[in-house]
Image (tube, rainbow over all chains, first blue to last red; front, top):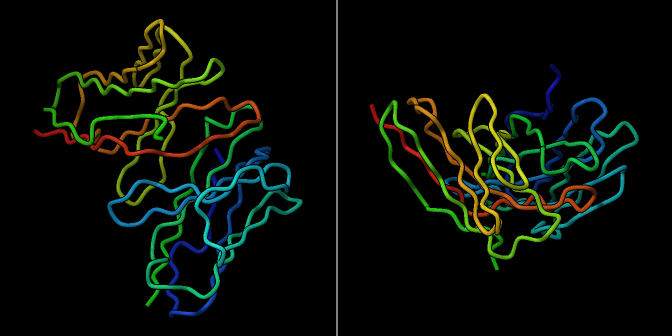
Length: 113
Length: 111
């Protein structure tokens, strides 16, 4: 069965650079979530989208932005990267009305040096 | 204010039954209770969801008392591969997505 696809799997950037993470949800899933997870920490909710509109916003820094496209894939754009942005970034998808049954991708490991 | 409270960690041995309790005193009428499992460097994985009484699937059971202010995830006969962090979430879904993770329970299964 198709799962949530995230790319790239690993990314190394320097401070002050920008990064773009991509997420391709499970087919027919219309809701996408983004999470940040630092070492030894719990996943922190960043932002979510439903039908290309932002549906919920969590602790996403102003330096980050995200959007969902017409094919339902989503991108997380991160600018002015800081060392503290180094983390695993997870994307999840679900069906509208069944948001609590979300399926997560393998994650993108971002390292800022 | 945290929506859920779980023990930080638990230890068990292979073959034992493990029960992880989650407190959610302020659960709303329309909220469901959902549990996720997370292995290191992997995304969380949906385990089970319930609204009231008892739910069972091939992986776990979920017990919810009548007042719904707590819930218990029960893992029968755990193995080493059940070592993971377990998260309890409460939320309505149904268009009111609330997928925020609190502090999970780190379960360590020993041989």
